[in-house]
Length: 188
Image (cartoon, rainbow, N blue to C red):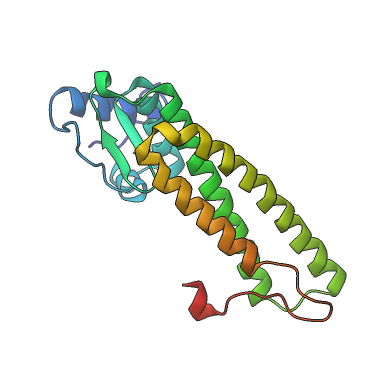
């Protein structure tokens, strides 16, 4: 796994994609093999995680890899590659999961920081509630579209549960009360 060559005119992500593709073609990576974590593999190549993700994206589009947050990145045969719909649904589920994580961090910051003024707190929580409602609608649509993909159903269920939990922990408190947010032990 050589680090990208700075003298090579191709971008680093393309060099990594070419290296991984060659490893699949020559049998060093077999269908079903799970790649190391993004952070670990990016470190082996000596690049940022974002650069490594670009390489994975190229190989997913070409049908060499399939990725899901719950299962990691797996080598597939191009003829066994997931359908474009599956790839789209997986990517959308991953985006929603990332957005839920961001909202969870925002709620956590509210609970850890000094108590914001009433109007400021109400405004921030109202924004979070609106975003939760929007994401909930997207998850419902995703659940409908993922009905034919058993391996995606569990991910959709987990995101729904995360949204429901976040909706409960970040709900708007009664006037003058602190938000109903989990303590540090409950957040783990």
